[in-house]
Image (tube, rainbow, N blue to C red; front, side, top):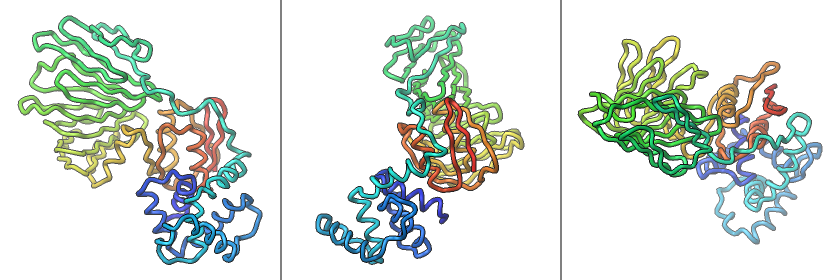
Length: 383
């Protein structure tokens, strides 16, 4: 486990943002002797609010812990470990670290991380537009009509950021396309009852009625599907380099043009991935990667729930800073510039999409290996 992951978990725990899984991971790492010096230094900095002060003596930690124990008896059930480690955990429970940590944040990042109020979390997620078969455009952010008539025999019911299509098989279908802007998500129930969630900067193109032997849609960006089962009419999802064939299942497709790989993550059912002349079956709990240049299909086991974290309003990062910044750019609508030799190390992090961009970048800076500067709509990334 790298120091960057340990520092990240320490900061999450100190600020009260840890998920139950992250807290369990942090507690296990605290017990490992290899992190002792790092933990003690982090505790000193946060509790004393000054990087220049020396380490905190164990007797001071013991006195602090004794005071905490008088009001927090549940801490005594912690595993046996050095007293200063228990002090770190107990102090975190009382919020002492989070207060000092805020001071440390402002101090350590003031020279290179101005707090830009122009990049809060998006206030709402209805940034989308609907393009009809005659190429007319409905701005779904501005048009709050509850019922949309898109063609004879087809109506759309709207509730919040959900569009639900109703159509008859007797119509001559036209093609509709839903586009989400940066910082926006949208949901659509297709004419067959299939549900699709669109991530930011994504699109889905589909007919207003599925009258052919197959149900085909075309996507760009990232879309999560819950397919309505129809045994005699397979559902086909198309990107510019591959197809996914299903009957009834739940899966996520990430196919942004700026990403080298198209990633399909399967939660339920089974799908066939088709790329070039290759065909492979994907099972629940697996991901399929299709490289845009080589068109090969690589299948592996994965935590597919992380793939749909965006649908639940979370960022789940596990990659280099370039991959992370591409995702942040799609949500916060920013331009990213790199200066100097930027690390290629992997970062593992979890954030709410309701957090502002500066707060997320500050957390990433705690690794000590990367720095950011926000100027208007541009974020500069440097070592």
